[in-house]
Length: 253
Image (cartoon, rainbow, N blue to C red; front, side, top):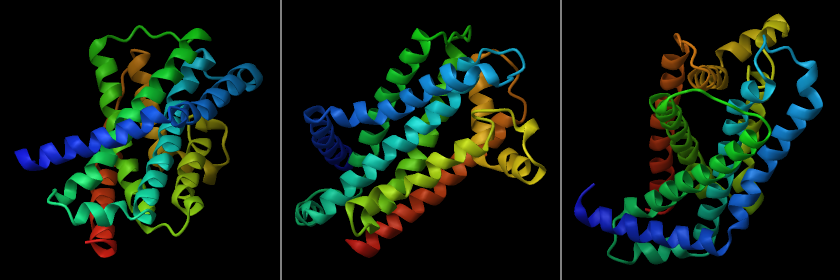
């Protein structure tokens, strides 16, 4: 990114962040559903789920973090749809600014907003009993994986927001993302699932990502899960980025 592109991206990032600061309920709303699920599963279902000795809140938190990200990127898609339908993108195109800055402003805003929501969720988890003895390096690794996943899902949101015909359509792409953690190791161990469901759960991206995060903050060996998780995150990011750029060029460029 050259100096001109960087300056344009920073300016548009500031614009998007100001919109969020004027409407902080977006971040609060993004965090409310995951926090409600965290409380419900811990206090309603947690006592009936065998996690092999680990506290259920410790077992559950990684899956809740992924649901938080999926909820957050839905708002990114909606913000893009609003800009497109409101003619903002056409105005930007008539100005001497880098085309890539238009998208990157939204993408970086998504990462920042999601990180704030994730911090809120983790704080609630700590209040209800979550504890981790993981060191700084392990938490940085957790952060790195979450940021990679957030970028990948945000670029999927870019395509959805640009292609949507209505506000409801802009956020609808996130529904499958919210469903995937329920068919994974996020809420219960996969060992008790029927054979076909267990196979799917163990080979879809959420399970490897959740297992990696869980083992990192529990100071346990991550095994091959970390490489599988990184492969899913990086592969999805590459595909989503290419799809987002293609959608942008076809619709607006």
